Amino acid sequence: MGMTITEKILAAHAGKDKVGPGEIVQVRPDLLMINDVSGPMAVDAFASVGAKRVFDRHKVAVILDHFTPNKDVNAAKASAKLRAFAKDQGLPHFYDAGFGIEHVVLPELGLIRPGDLVLGADSHTVTYGALGAFATGVGSTDLAAAMALGETWLKVPETIRLDFRGRSSRWIGGKDLILLAIGEIGVSGALYCSMEFGGEAISRLDMDGRFTMCNMAIEAGGKAGIVEPDEKTEQWLREVMESTGGRAGTVSDGAQFRISLRDLRSDKDCTYREILSFDVTDLEPQVAAPHLPSNVRPVSDLKSVEIHQVVIGSCTNGRISDLRAAAEILKGRKVNRWVRTLIIPGSRRVYAQALREGLIDIFVDSGAVVAPPTCGPCFGGHMGALAEGERCVSTTNRNFTGRMGHVTSEVYLAGPYVAAASAVAGRIAHPEEV
Amino acid sequence: MEILGRVWKFGDNVDTDQIIPGQYLSIQDPKALGKHCMEGIDRGFSARIKPGDILVAGANFGCGSSREHAPVAIKACGVGAIIAESFARIFFRNAVNIGLIAIECEEACRRIGSQDEVLILPEEGLIKNMTTKEEFKFAPYPPLVADIVKAGGLLPYVRMRLRGREGE
Image 1 (spheres, chains in turn green, red):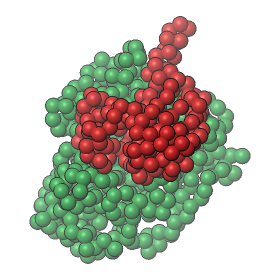
Image 2 (image 1 turned 90 degrees about the vertical axis):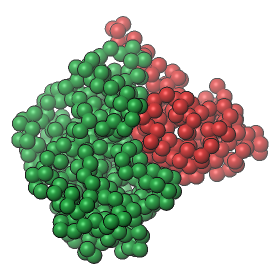
Image 3 (image 1 turned 45 degrees about the vertical axis):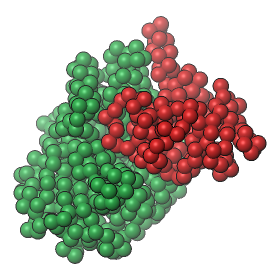
Image 4 (image 1 turned 180 degrees about the horizontal axis):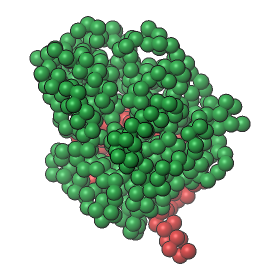
Protein backbone atom coordinates (compact mmCIF):
# COMPACT_ATOMS: atom_id res chain seq x y z
CA MET A 1 0.00 0.00 0.00
CA GLY A 2 1.32 3.43 -0.89
CA MET A 3 1.12 6.66 1.08
CA THR A 4 -0.47 10.05 0.50
CA ILE A 5 1.81 13.11 0.35
CA THR A 6 0.67 13.95 3.88
CA GLU A 7 1.67 10.52 5.19
CA LYS A 8 5.04 10.74 3.42
CA ILE A 9 5.92 14.04 5.07
CA LEU A 10 4.84 12.83 8.51
CA ALA A 11 6.76 9.56 8.08
CA ALA A 12 9.92 11.45 7.07
CA HIS A 13 9.70 13.71 10.13
CA ALA A 14 8.96 10.80 12.46
CA GLY A 15 11.97 8.88 11.14
CA LYS A 16 9.77 6.08 9.85
CA ASP A 17 9.48 4.37 6.48
CA LYS A 18 5.73 4.25 6.64
CA VAL A 19 2.87 5.67 8.68
CA GLY A 20 -0.88 5.18 8.40
CA PRO A 21 -4.00 7.10 9.50
CA GLY A 22 -4.75 7.00 13.23
CA GLU A 23 -1.14 6.32 14.18
CA ILE A 24 0.30 8.71 16.76
CA VAL A 25 3.83 9.80 15.86
CA GLN A 26 6.50 12.01 17.43
CA VAL A 27 7.68 14.43 14.76
CA ARG A 28 10.53 16.95 14.56
CA PRO A 29 9.26 20.17 12.93
CA ASP A 30 11.26 22.29 10.47
CA LEU A 31 9.71 25.54 11.63
CA LEU A 32 7.61 26.82 14.54
CA MET A 33 5.74 30.10 14.50
CA ILE A 34 4.12 32.35 17.11
CA ASN A 35 2.37 35.71 16.71
CA ASP A 36 1.33 38.53 19.03
CA VAL A 37 -1.92 36.76 19.99
CA SER A 38 -0.59 33.27 20.64
CA GLY A 39 3.00 34.22 21.46
CA PRO A 40 2.76 35.82 24.92
CA MET A 41 1.05 32.73 26.39
CA ALA A 42 3.60 30.51 24.62
CA VAL A 43 6.53 32.52 25.99
CA ASP A 44 5.13 32.32 29.52
CA ALA A 45 4.52 28.59 29.17
CA PHE A 46 8.05 28.13 27.80
CA ALA A 47 9.52 29.87 30.83
CA SER A 48 7.29 28.02 33.26
CA VAL A 49 8.62 24.59 32.27
CA GLY A 50 12.13 25.70 33.10
CA ALA A 51 13.32 25.76 29.47
CA LYS A 52 16.22 28.14 28.86
CA ARG A 53 16.86 28.09 25.11
CA VAL A 54 14.60 27.18 22.20
CA PHE A 55 15.62 23.87 20.60
CA ASP A 56 16.97 25.62 17.48
CA ARG A 57 16.94 29.40 17.19
CA HIS A 58 16.81 29.20 13.38
CA LYS A 59 13.56 27.25 13.50
CA VAL A 60 11.39 29.56 15.57
CA ALA A 61 9.71 32.48 13.80
CA VAL A 62 8.08 35.31 15.74
CA ILE A 63 5.84 37.73 13.89
CA LEU A 64 3.78 40.65 15.16
CA ASP A 65 0.75 40.99 12.93
CA HIS A 66 -2.60 40.68 14.72
CA PHE A 67 -2.90 43.80 16.89
CA THR A 68 -0.17 45.72 15.07
CA PRO A 69 0.47 48.58 14.67
CA ASN A 70 -0.33 48.29 18.38
CA LYS A 71 -4.03 48.73 19.01
CA ASP A 72 -3.69 49.67 22.68
CA VAL A 73 -1.51 49.27 25.76
CA ASN A 74 -2.31 45.55 26.15
CA ALA A 75 -1.29 44.94 22.55
CA ALA A 76 1.86 46.99 23.04
CA LYS A 77 2.75 44.86 26.07
CA ALA A 78 2.25 41.67 24.08
CA SER A 79 4.50 42.96 21.30
CA ALA A 80 7.14 44.09 23.79
CA LYS A 81 7.17 40.67 25.43
CA LEU A 82 7.79 38.93 22.11
CA ARG A 83 10.45 41.43 21.05
CA ALA A 84 12.29 40.76 24.31
CA PHE A 85 11.96 37.01 23.82
CA ALA A 86 13.32 37.19 20.26
CA LYS A 87 16.25 39.32 21.41
CA ASP A 88 17.02 37.11 24.38
CA GLN A 89 16.88 33.93 22.33
CA GLY A 90 18.77 35.49 19.41
CA LEU A 91 16.08 34.57 16.90
CA PRO A 92 16.98 35.54 13.34
CA HIS A 93 13.38 35.14 12.19
CA PHE A 94 11.77 37.94 14.15
CA TYR A 95 9.40 40.12 12.13
CA ASP A 96 8.08 43.25 13.79
CA ALA A 97 4.94 45.24 12.95
CA GLY A 98 4.75 46.16 9.30
CA PHE A 99 6.45 43.10 7.80
CA GLY A 100 3.00 41.78 7.20
CA ILE A 101 0.71 38.87 7.92
CA GLU A 102 2.47 35.68 9.02
CA HIS A 103 1.03 33.41 6.33
CA VAL A 104 1.89 35.85 3.57
CA VAL A 105 5.33 36.74 4.94
CA LEU A 106 6.86 33.38 5.82
CA PRO A 107 6.38 31.81 2.37
CA GLU A 108 7.59 34.91 0.51
CA LEU A 109 10.77 34.94 2.64
CA GLY A 110 11.45 31.41 1.48
CA LEU A 111 11.07 29.95 4.96
CA ILE A 112 8.58 27.30 3.85
CA ARG A 113 9.63 24.57 1.47
CA PRO A 114 7.98 21.55 -0.07
CA GLY A 115 8.14 18.57 2.25
CA ASP A 116 8.56 20.70 5.38
CA LEU A 117 6.64 20.12 8.57
CA VAL A 118 5.51 23.39 10.12
CA LEU A 119 3.62 24.07 13.33
CA GLY A 120 2.19 27.51 13.92
CA ALA A 121 0.27 28.86 16.88
CA ASP A 122 -2.39 30.10 14.50
CA SER A 123 -5.13 28.09 12.86
CA HIS A 124 -4.38 29.42 9.37
CA THR A 125 -0.92 27.87 9.43
CA VAL A 126 -2.53 25.35 7.04
CA THR A 127 -1.86 27.95 4.31
CA TYR A 128 1.67 26.62 3.71
CA GLY A 129 0.28 23.36 2.33
CA ALA A 130 0.08 25.21 -0.99
CA LEU A 131 3.83 24.63 -1.27
CA GLY A 132 3.53 20.91 -0.61
CA ALA A 133 4.41 21.23 3.07
CA PHE A 134 2.50 19.72 5.98
CA ALA A 135 1.52 22.66 8.13
CA THR A 136 -0.99 22.77 10.94
CA GLY A 137 -2.19 25.05 13.69
CA VAL A 138 -1.73 24.38 17.39
CA GLY A 139 -2.28 26.37 20.57
CA SER A 140 0.22 28.34 22.64
CA THR A 141 1.02 25.54 25.10
CA ASP A 142 1.65 23.00 22.32
CA LEU A 143 3.92 25.48 20.58
CA ALA A 144 5.79 26.23 23.81
CA ALA A 145 6.36 22.51 24.36
CA ALA A 146 7.66 22.14 20.80
CA MET A 147 10.01 25.12 21.27
CA ALA A 148 11.43 23.43 24.35
CA LEU A 149 11.59 19.85 23.11
CA GLY A 150 12.05 20.24 19.34
CA GLU A 151 9.30 17.72 18.79
CA THR A 152 5.60 17.17 19.21
CA TRP A 153 3.03 14.43 18.78
CA LEU A 154 0.62 14.26 15.88
CA LYS A 155 -2.04 11.81 14.92
CA VAL A 156 -1.61 10.86 11.26
CA PRO A 157 -4.79 12.16 9.60
CA GLU A 158 -6.87 10.44 6.99
CA THR A 159 -6.66 12.21 3.63
CA ILE A 160 -9.61 13.44 1.59
CA ARG A 161 -8.80 14.06 -2.07
CA LEU A 162 -10.68 16.97 -3.65
CA ASP A 163 -10.44 17.10 -7.44
CA PHE A 164 -11.45 20.23 -9.31
CA ARG A 165 -12.28 19.71 -12.98
CA GLY A 166 -13.28 21.88 -15.89
CA ARG A 167 -12.39 25.36 -17.09
CA SER A 168 -13.91 28.23 -15.16
CA SER A 169 -14.65 31.83 -16.10
CA ARG A 170 -12.15 34.62 -15.55
CA TRP A 171 -13.90 35.77 -12.37
CA ILE A 172 -13.22 32.51 -10.54
CA GLY A 173 -10.25 32.24 -8.19
CA GLY A 174 -9.01 30.03 -5.37
CA LYS A 175 -11.56 31.57 -3.01
CA ASP A 176 -14.49 30.45 -5.14
CA LEU A 177 -13.14 26.90 -5.37
CA ILE A 178 -12.56 26.51 -1.65
CA LEU A 179 -15.94 28.07 -0.79
CA LEU A 180 -17.58 25.66 -3.23
CA ALA A 181 -15.91 22.74 -1.42
CA ILE A 182 -16.72 23.97 2.10
CA GLY A 183 -20.33 24.62 1.04
CA GLU A 184 -20.50 21.02 -0.09
CA ILE A 185 -18.82 19.23 2.85
CA GLY A 186 -19.64 21.63 5.69
CA VAL A 187 -17.59 23.20 8.48
CA SER A 188 -16.75 19.84 10.02
CA GLY A 189 -16.68 17.87 6.75
CA ALA A 190 -12.93 17.38 6.92
CA LEU A 191 -12.57 17.29 10.72
CA TYR A 192 -9.12 15.90 11.65
CA CYS A 193 -8.40 15.16 7.95
CA SER A 194 -5.82 16.35 5.47
CA MET A 195 -7.48 17.95 2.42
CA GLU A 196 -5.48 17.22 -0.69
CA PHE A 197 -6.43 19.56 -3.55
CA GLY A 198 -5.82 18.44 -7.13
CA GLY A 199 -7.20 18.12 -10.63
CA GLU A 200 -6.79 20.22 -13.76
CA ALA A 201 -8.33 23.36 -12.25
CA ILE A 202 -5.72 23.28 -9.46
CA SER A 203 -2.92 22.71 -12.00
CA ARG A 204 -4.06 25.88 -13.75
CA LEU A 205 -4.47 27.85 -10.52
CA ASP A 206 -1.60 30.21 -9.62
CA MET A 207 0.26 29.88 -6.33
CA ASP A 208 -1.64 32.78 -4.74
CA GLY A 209 -4.90 30.94 -5.43
CA ARG A 210 -3.48 27.75 -3.94
CA PHE A 211 -2.48 29.63 -0.78
CA THR A 212 -6.07 30.89 -0.54
CA MET A 213 -7.45 27.36 -0.84
CA CYS A 214 -5.14 25.73 1.69
CA ASN A 215 -5.68 28.69 4.03
CA MET A 216 -9.36 27.79 4.39
CA ALA A 217 -8.92 24.03 4.90
CA ILE A 218 -9.37 24.77 8.62
CA GLU A 219 -12.85 26.16 7.87
CA ALA A 220 -13.90 22.63 6.96
CA GLY A 221 -12.23 21.34 10.14
CA GLY A 222 -9.16 20.17 8.21
CA LYS A 223 -5.90 19.49 9.98
CA ALA A 224 -4.06 20.47 6.81
CA GLY A 225 -4.63 21.49 3.24
CA ILE A 226 -2.06 20.38 0.71
CA VAL A 227 -1.26 20.59 -3.00
CA GLU A 228 1.29 18.30 -4.63
CA PRO A 229 4.18 20.48 -5.86
CA ASP A 230 4.43 20.97 -9.62
CA GLU A 231 6.22 23.24 -12.12
CA LYS A 232 4.27 26.24 -10.79
CA THR A 233 5.51 25.52 -7.27
CA GLU A 234 9.10 25.22 -8.46
CA GLN A 235 8.87 28.39 -10.52
CA TRP A 236 7.41 30.26 -7.55
CA LEU A 237 10.21 29.03 -5.30
CA ARG A 238 12.86 30.04 -7.85
CA GLU A 239 11.41 33.56 -7.92
CA VAL A 240 11.40 33.68 -4.12
CA MET A 241 15.05 32.62 -4.07
CA GLU A 242 15.92 35.40 -6.50
CA SER A 243 13.87 38.07 -4.74
CA THR A 244 15.36 37.22 -1.34
CA GLY A 245 18.88 37.27 -2.77
CA GLY A 246 19.30 33.58 -2.05
CA ARG A 247 18.18 33.97 1.54
CA ALA A 248 15.52 31.37 0.95
CA GLY A 249 16.10 28.26 2.97
CA THR A 250 18.01 29.90 5.77
CA VAL A 251 15.96 27.81 8.14
CA SER A 252 18.85 25.93 9.68
CA ASP A 253 19.79 22.88 7.65
CA GLY A 254 19.33 24.85 4.51
CA ALA A 255 18.32 23.88 1.07
CA GLN A 256 17.85 20.17 1.43
CA PHE A 257 14.32 18.97 0.98
CA ARG A 258 13.41 16.19 3.34
CA ILE A 259 11.94 14.25 0.49
CA SER A 260 12.87 14.79 -3.14
CA LEU A 261 10.37 16.93 -5.02
CA ARG A 262 9.65 14.04 -7.36
CA ASP A 263 8.49 11.84 -4.49
CA LEU A 264 6.34 14.59 -2.99
CA ARG A 265 3.09 13.27 -4.38
CA SER A 266 0.54 10.72 -3.32
CA ASP A 267 1.23 7.18 -4.51
CA LYS A 268 -1.22 5.69 -7.00
CA ASP A 269 -2.09 2.96 -4.51
CA CYS A 270 -2.49 5.26 -1.49
CA THR A 271 -5.66 5.23 0.59
CA TYR A 272 -8.02 8.19 0.64
CA ARG A 273 -10.92 8.40 3.07
CA GLU A 274 -12.90 9.67 0.11
CA ILE A 275 -12.40 11.28 -3.26
CA LEU A 276 -14.62 14.25 -4.09
CA SER A 277 -14.99 15.81 -7.48
CA PHE A 278 -16.06 19.36 -8.30
CA ASP A 279 -16.87 20.66 -11.76
CA VAL A 280 -15.97 24.34 -12.00
CA THR A 281 -17.22 24.86 -15.56
CA ASP A 282 -19.83 27.67 -15.52
CA LEU A 283 -19.26 28.16 -11.80
CA GLU A 284 -20.56 31.51 -10.57
CA PRO A 285 -18.49 33.47 -8.04
CA GLN A 286 -19.23 32.02 -4.60
CA VAL A 287 -20.18 33.91 -1.45
CA ALA A 288 -20.47 32.55 2.11
CA ALA A 289 -23.40 34.23 3.86
CA PRO A 290 -23.55 34.66 7.66
CA HIS A 291 -22.70 32.97 9.99
CA LEU A 292 -20.71 29.99 8.75
CA PRO A 293 -18.14 29.62 5.96
CA SER A 294 -20.24 26.68 4.72
CA ASN A 295 -23.33 28.83 4.10
CA VAL A 296 -22.29 29.24 0.48
CA ARG A 297 -24.43 30.60 -2.38
CA PRO A 298 -23.77 31.78 -5.92
CA VAL A 299 -23.35 35.54 -5.94
CA SER A 300 -26.56 36.07 -7.95
CA ASP A 301 -28.62 34.76 -5.02
CA LEU A 302 -27.40 37.60 -2.80
CA LYS A 303 -27.60 40.61 -5.09
CA SER A 304 -30.20 42.38 -2.99
CA VAL A 305 -27.98 42.47 0.10
CA GLU A 306 -26.96 46.05 0.89
CA ILE A 307 -23.57 46.49 2.53
CA HIS A 308 -21.74 49.03 4.67
CA GLN A 309 -18.12 47.92 4.44
CA VAL A 310 -15.73 45.99 2.22
CA VAL A 311 -12.42 44.51 3.37
CA ILE A 312 -9.90 43.24 0.83
CA GLY A 313 -6.82 41.62 2.35
CA SER A 314 -5.85 39.05 5.03
CA CYS A 315 -3.87 35.79 5.01
CA THR A 316 -6.58 34.45 2.71
CA ASN A 317 -6.66 37.08 -0.04
CA GLY A 318 -4.00 39.72 0.69
CA ARG A 319 -1.51 38.72 -2.01
CA ILE A 320 -0.54 40.60 -5.15
CA SER A 321 -2.92 38.67 -7.44
CA ASP A 322 -5.78 39.59 -5.11
CA LEU A 323 -4.87 43.28 -5.24
CA ARG A 324 -4.57 43.09 -9.03
CA ALA A 325 -8.06 41.63 -9.20
CA ALA A 326 -9.45 44.38 -6.97
CA ALA A 327 -7.66 47.06 -9.00
CA GLU A 328 -9.03 45.66 -12.25
CA ILE A 329 -12.54 46.41 -10.96
CA LEU A 330 -11.79 49.67 -9.14
CA LYS A 331 -9.74 51.30 -11.91
CA GLY A 332 -11.47 54.51 -12.97
CA ARG A 333 -14.40 53.84 -10.64
CA LYS A 334 -15.44 55.19 -7.26
CA VAL A 335 -16.51 53.08 -4.34
CA ASN A 336 -20.05 53.73 -3.18
CA ARG A 337 -20.14 56.70 -0.79
CA TRP A 338 -21.93 54.64 1.87
CA VAL A 339 -19.42 51.77 1.79
CA ARG A 340 -16.15 52.09 3.71
CA THR A 341 -13.62 50.15 1.67
CA LEU A 342 -10.45 48.92 3.33
CA ILE A 343 -7.65 47.46 1.26
CA ILE A 344 -4.85 45.80 3.18
CA PRO A 345 -1.79 44.47 1.38
CA GLY A 346 -0.75 41.23 3.10
CA SER A 347 2.88 42.20 3.50
CA ARG A 348 5.37 45.00 2.98
CA ARG A 349 6.58 43.18 -0.12
CA VAL A 350 3.05 42.96 -1.53
CA TYR A 351 2.55 46.65 -0.66
CA ALA A 352 5.75 47.63 -2.48
CA GLN A 353 4.81 45.58 -5.52
CA ALA A 354 1.33 47.15 -5.57
CA LEU A 355 2.95 50.59 -5.44
CA ARG A 356 5.23 49.76 -8.36
CA GLU A 357 2.29 48.53 -10.41
CA GLY A 358 0.22 51.63 -9.67
CA LEU A 359 -2.46 49.67 -7.82
CA ILE A 360 -2.28 51.83 -4.70
CA ASP A 361 -3.02 54.92 -6.82
CA ILE A 362 -6.07 53.16 -8.25
CA PHE A 363 -7.30 52.29 -4.75
CA VAL A 364 -6.77 55.77 -3.33
CA ASP A 365 -8.41 57.38 -6.38
CA SER A 366 -11.41 55.08 -5.97
CA GLY A 367 -11.97 56.36 -2.43
CA ALA A 368 -10.71 53.25 -0.63
CA VAL A 369 -8.57 53.33 2.51
CA VAL A 370 -5.24 51.58 2.07
CA ALA A 371 -4.11 50.28 5.46
CA PRO A 372 -0.75 48.91 6.61
CA PRO A 373 -0.38 45.11 6.59
CA THR A 374 -2.22 43.66 9.60
CA CYS A 375 -4.72 40.93 10.53
CA GLY A 376 -6.74 43.62 12.39
CA PRO A 377 -10.24 43.75 10.88
CA CYS A 378 -10.52 40.04 9.98
CA PHE A 379 -11.02 38.99 13.60
CA GLY A 380 -12.57 42.19 14.93
CA GLY A 381 -9.22 42.98 16.53
CA HIS A 382 -8.78 46.56 15.42
CA MET A 383 -9.56 48.79 12.44
CA GLY A 384 -12.77 48.36 10.52
CA ALA A 385 -14.94 47.02 13.35
CA LEU A 386 -18.64 46.78 12.49
CA ALA A 387 -21.51 48.44 14.37
CA GLU A 388 -24.85 46.88 15.22
CA GLY A 389 -26.52 45.35 12.18
CA GLU A 390 -23.84 46.43 9.72
CA ARG A 391 -22.91 44.14 6.82
CA CYS A 392 -19.47 43.63 5.33
CA VAL A 393 -18.24 41.82 2.24
CA SER A 394 -14.81 40.54 3.13
CA THR A 395 -12.11 38.51 1.41
CA THR A 396 -11.16 37.03 4.80
CA ASN A 397 -11.86 33.50 6.04
CA ARG A 398 -14.49 33.53 8.78
CA ASN A 399 -17.98 34.95 9.04
CA PHE A 400 -18.87 33.67 12.51
CA THR A 401 -21.32 35.61 14.68
CA GLY A 402 -19.68 38.87 15.72
CA ARG A 403 -16.41 37.99 13.99
CA MET A 404 -15.73 41.55 12.79
CA GLY A 405 -17.48 43.52 15.50
CA HIS A 406 -20.93 43.75 17.06
CA VAL A 407 -22.72 40.42 17.57
CA THR A 408 -25.52 41.50 15.25
CA SER A 409 -23.16 42.52 12.43
CA GLU A 410 -22.80 40.28 9.39
CA VAL A 411 -19.87 39.13 7.26
CA TYR A 412 -20.16 37.81 3.69
CA LEU A 413 -17.03 36.03 2.50
CA ALA A 414 -16.01 36.39 -1.14
CA GLY A 415 -13.06 36.69 -3.48
CA PRO A 416 -11.50 40.04 -4.44
CA TYR A 417 -13.49 40.49 -7.68
CA VAL A 418 -16.84 40.23 -5.92
CA ALA A 419 -15.62 42.32 -2.97
CA ALA A 420 -14.42 45.15 -5.22
CA ALA A 421 -17.57 45.04 -7.36
CA SER A 422 -19.71 45.15 -4.21
CA ALA A 423 -17.77 48.18 -2.94
CA VAL A 424 -18.72 50.03 -6.12
CA ALA A 425 -22.33 48.83 -6.22
CA GLY A 426 -23.08 49.34 -2.52
CA ARG A 427 -24.60 45.86 -2.43
CA ILE A 428 -23.34 42.38 -3.18
CA ALA A 429 -22.54 42.35 -6.88
CA HIS A 430 -21.16 40.18 -9.66
CA PRO A 431 -18.02 41.75 -11.19
CA GLU A 432 -19.79 41.91 -14.55
CA GLU A 433 -22.38 44.29 -13.11
CA VAL A 434 -19.99 47.18 -12.66
CA MET B 1 -11.27 12.67 40.19
CA GLU B 2 -14.90 13.56 39.60
CA ILE B 3 -16.81 16.55 38.31
CA LEU B 4 -20.31 17.41 39.51
CA GLY B 5 -22.27 20.34 38.22
CA ARG B 6 -25.27 21.83 36.46
CA VAL B 7 -25.50 21.67 32.69
CA TRP B 8 -25.48 24.62 30.30
CA LYS B 9 -26.41 23.54 26.79
CA PHE B 10 -25.13 24.86 23.47
CA GLY B 11 -25.71 23.83 19.85
CA ASP B 12 -23.47 22.80 16.95
CA ASN B 13 -20.39 24.66 15.70
CA VAL B 14 -19.82 26.89 18.73
CA ASP B 15 -16.78 28.78 17.43
CA THR B 16 -13.88 30.35 19.27
CA ASP B 17 -15.09 33.85 18.38
CA GLN B 18 -18.28 33.12 20.31
CA ILE B 19 -16.32 31.66 23.21
CA ILE B 20 -13.99 34.64 23.45
CA PRO B 21 -14.45 37.46 20.89
CA GLY B 22 -11.35 38.66 19.03
CA GLN B 23 -11.28 42.06 20.69
CA TYR B 24 -10.21 40.40 23.98
CA LEU B 25 -7.24 38.47 22.56
CA SER B 26 -4.70 40.99 23.75
CA ILE B 27 -5.68 39.99 27.31
CA GLN B 28 -3.50 37.25 28.83
CA ASP B 29 -4.86 37.06 32.40
CA PRO B 30 -7.08 33.96 32.72
CA LYS B 31 -9.48 35.59 35.25
CA ALA B 32 -10.00 38.61 33.01
CA LEU B 33 -10.62 36.29 30.03
CA GLY B 34 -13.04 34.24 32.13
CA LYS B 35 -15.25 37.29 32.63
CA HIS B 36 -15.86 37.41 28.87
CA CYS B 37 -16.39 33.67 28.47
CA MET B 38 -19.10 32.81 25.87
CA GLU B 39 -19.79 36.52 25.42
CA GLY B 40 -20.30 36.10 21.66
CA ILE B 41 -23.18 33.68 22.15
CA ASP B 42 -24.51 34.17 25.68
CA ARG B 43 -23.75 37.49 27.33
CA GLY B 44 -23.75 37.17 31.12
CA PHE B 45 -22.78 33.50 31.03
CA SER B 46 -19.76 33.95 33.26
CA ALA B 47 -21.88 35.62 35.97
CA ARG B 48 -24.43 32.80 36.03
CA ILE B 49 -22.08 29.85 36.15
CA LYS B 50 -21.01 28.10 39.36
CA PRO B 51 -17.68 26.30 39.80
CA GLY B 52 -17.86 22.76 38.45
CA ASP B 53 -20.73 23.42 36.04
CA ILE B 54 -20.65 21.51 32.79
CA LEU B 55 -21.00 22.60 29.17
CA VAL B 56 -22.89 20.19 26.92
CA ALA B 57 -22.71 21.02 23.23
CA GLY B 58 -23.30 19.64 19.74
CA ALA B 59 -20.85 18.87 16.97
CA ASN B 60 -17.56 20.65 16.17
CA PHE B 61 -17.29 22.55 19.47
CA GLY B 62 -14.48 25.14 19.45
CA CYS B 63 -14.14 25.43 15.69
CA GLY B 64 -12.24 28.35 14.26
CA SER B 65 -9.07 29.88 15.57
CA SER B 66 -6.27 28.27 17.57
CA ARG B 67 -6.63 30.84 20.36
CA GLU B 68 -5.88 29.12 23.63
CA HIS B 69 -7.74 32.03 25.20
CA ALA B 70 -10.92 30.01 24.47
CA PRO B 71 -10.34 26.96 26.72
CA VAL B 72 -8.48 29.21 29.18
CA ALA B 73 -11.56 31.46 29.48
CA ILE B 74 -13.85 28.46 29.93
CA LYS B 75 -11.65 26.94 32.61
CA ALA B 76 -11.07 30.26 34.38
CA CYS B 77 -14.77 31.06 34.68
CA GLY B 78 -15.26 27.81 36.55
CA VAL B 79 -16.47 25.25 34.02
CA GLY B 80 -15.50 21.76 35.19
CA ALA B 81 -15.77 19.91 31.88
CA ILE B 82 -17.16 20.05 28.35
CA ILE B 83 -19.13 17.22 26.80
CA ALA B 84 -19.67 17.57 23.06
CA GLU B 85 -20.73 15.40 20.14
CA SER B 86 -17.36 16.29 18.61
CA PHE B 87 -14.60 18.88 19.02
CA ALA B 88 -12.59 20.89 16.52
CA ARG B 89 -9.10 19.42 16.74
CA ILE B 90 -7.07 22.45 17.86
CA PHE B 91 -9.57 23.25 20.60
CA PHE B 92 -9.48 19.66 21.83
CA ARG B 93 -5.67 19.66 21.97
CA ASN B 94 -5.62 23.01 23.74
CA ALA B 95 -8.17 21.84 26.32
CA VAL B 96 -6.19 18.68 27.10
CA ASN B 97 -2.96 20.69 27.27
CA ILE B 98 -4.30 23.08 29.91
CA GLY B 99 -6.02 20.35 31.91
CA LEU B 100 -9.62 21.10 30.93
CA ILE B 101 -11.66 17.91 30.60
CA ALA B 102 -13.17 17.56 27.09
CA ILE B 103 -15.30 14.49 26.41
CA GLU B 104 -16.84 13.29 23.17
CA CYS B 105 -20.14 11.46 23.73
CA GLU B 106 -22.92 11.89 21.20
CA GLU B 107 -25.62 10.11 23.15
CA ALA B 108 -25.02 12.08 26.33
CA CYS B 109 -25.24 15.32 24.38
CA ARG B 110 -28.58 14.33 22.89
CA ARG B 111 -30.12 13.07 26.14
CA ILE B 112 -28.85 15.48 28.79
CA GLY B 113 -31.07 18.51 29.34
CA SER B 114 -30.35 22.07 30.32
CA GLN B 115 -29.87 22.50 34.10
CA ASP B 116 -29.67 18.73 34.70
CA GLU B 117 -27.20 17.79 37.40
CA VAL B 118 -24.44 15.65 35.96
CA LEU B 119 -21.57 13.68 37.47
CA ILE B 120 -18.52 12.83 35.35
CA LEU B 121 -16.00 10.15 36.28
CA PRO B 122 -13.27 10.73 33.65
CA GLU B 123 -11.05 7.76 34.54
CA GLU B 124 -13.97 5.36 34.43
CA GLY B 125 -15.30 6.83 31.19
CA LEU B 126 -18.69 7.38 32.82
CA ILE B 127 -21.25 10.19 32.79
CA LYS B 128 -24.18 10.01 35.23
CA ASN B 129 -27.19 12.26 34.85
CA MET B 130 -28.22 12.67 38.51
CA THR B 131 -31.50 14.34 37.49
CA THR B 132 -32.78 11.58 35.18
CA LYS B 133 -30.64 8.68 36.54
CA GLU B 134 -29.36 7.91 33.03
CA GLU B 135 -25.77 6.79 32.48
CA PHE B 136 -23.49 7.17 29.46
CA LYS B 137 -20.13 5.63 28.64
CA PHE B 138 -17.39 7.33 26.64
CA ALA B 139 -14.15 6.10 25.08
CA PRO B 140 -11.05 6.81 27.17
CA TYR B 141 -8.26 9.05 25.81
CA PRO B 142 -5.59 7.32 23.68
CA PRO B 143 -2.43 6.42 25.72
CA LEU B 144 -0.24 9.47 25.01
CA VAL B 145 -3.13 11.89 25.55
CA ALA B 146 -4.04 10.06 28.76
CA ASP B 147 -0.45 10.57 29.98
CA ILE B 148 -0.74 14.31 29.41
CA VAL B 149 -4.10 14.46 31.20
CA LYS B 150 -2.70 12.40 34.07
CA ALA B 151 0.30 14.72 34.40
CA GLY B 152 -2.20 17.60 34.80
CA GLY B 153 -1.64 19.08 31.35
CA LEU B 154 1.15 19.40 28.82
CA LEU B 155 3.41 21.72 30.83
CA PRO B 156 3.95 19.34 33.77
CA TYR B 157 4.51 16.61 31.18
CA VAL B 158 7.17 18.69 29.38
CA ARG B 159 8.81 19.62 32.68
CA MET B 160 9.11 15.91 33.38
CA ARG B 161 10.62 15.25 29.94
CA LEU B 162 13.11 18.13 30.26
CA ARG B 163 14.25 16.89 33.66
CA GLY B 164 14.73 13.46 32.09
CA ARG B 165 16.97 14.98 29.41
CA GLU B 166 19.10 16.83 31.94
CA GLY B 167 19.62 13.54 33.73
CA GLU B 168 20.91 11.89 30.55
